[in-house]
Length: 239
Length: 349
Image 1 (cartoon, rainbow over the protein chains, first blue to last red):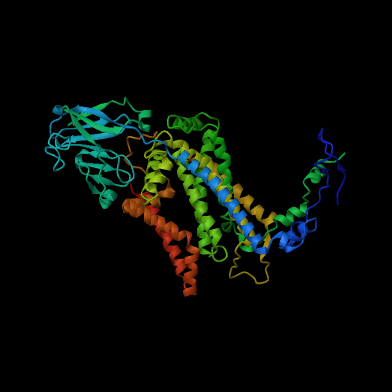
Image 2 (cartoon, each protein chain N blue to C red; image 1 turned 90 degrees about the vertical axis):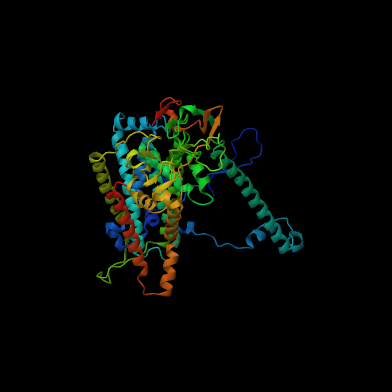
């Protein structure tokens, strides 16, 4: 039942485009929630009541109409999927970090000041601890004699290859130990126990280069440890 | 002049009778026992988490430089900050426990069987959401455990073949923990995961309302006893009683064992003894027993089996209708989880 109706109060509009119908609120009952059964012919018959001709030829054959409806649905669905999919790709690209962390060659020590058998702990600008050691002979067969490898240098990262915890040196057991999952490595970084030994994961090595008698190492410049750590160029010597 | 009630009724035309007919879901009699109401328990605790979480968010700062100090401010300077943080921590612990107990109840009463498989799948998603909420939650404090937990968690993701590297980079906003990592964990913990959880809970409850709660009858129950009682007010009162008891338990735990703070995160030093929260002890022990990819893939396989369990169980019952194999698999699974958890809790390394 319709209640009192009023003309649109919008100024400047002569004939009411929108009619405001005030309808008293009704108490909902279960009957109102019942869904009307869907009749496939309802839409066509309702529209054919107007001035549209009812003949099948004007409205199109069911096949043609079905095809057009399918094409429209496909076009609409495809368009929406494409549009929102593009937005999704943009969002994913936005969340993916835009540039890899910067790294640079850094001076470590003069080659002459590090005799075979010596080692030092290097602290990179990112705050990472790197153990640099010089073996008695070349660590890689076939390396050029004046290269870092040929001179016996290695630079071991302190990040465990298993799940990224920091290893520490245990002098009494002459090994690097990872407290997270009990991984252990020998002084050259080869795995000796725990999950890294099962998977054959060695401690990662940093690239080294010798130039004009100076040892350089490639390491990162940025890291969260830098935020609160001591000065980034700090180096400590040992052994 | 119209009374406020009449004024409201005119605008919201819902009568008391309507409300009763909308809410009066028949509830099977076994739900009169509180231990069958473990589904409502995590829901209530989740509500506590939302309220206390919003309060914590007023002071928390998600930057590595200031996160730890902001948590210290909440714990030591903000009025009742220690209480709100402790309730948040304990409600998280109890929520994980309640979700696990609810899942075990559903498992051992076979309530996941046809036609309820979909709700089991949604329940599994809710279990994972709860665990990831716990993981991202303790990563926010920026203590040693937070930092190394996040690092290990991201590297576990990295061990997954093909997509692992991408997942790790997306989680950490880089290939290692950096200054843009913590805001990610914060957004996941305080926005993405809660919104997902709310959506999943809504679907979970909607499906329960559509299908009805599984009916269970005890052997000694008289046959002529009515099988159902009313959701409103009878069952609602049971839930309210549980909520009251939980609030008392949470308050006592928060006062007696308040949330503490470990040492600030040090990206250069992994502590000599490090363990995650108790609900990850199983996974942590598993990671010590097997190498990276093997451990991660086997854990993924166990989670997959848990997801598709209703279909596996249907196969078992189809081939051997009287078999109790499903129950024994459940018992073995629960025992394995218990043994690995106790083992990890008992030893240092």
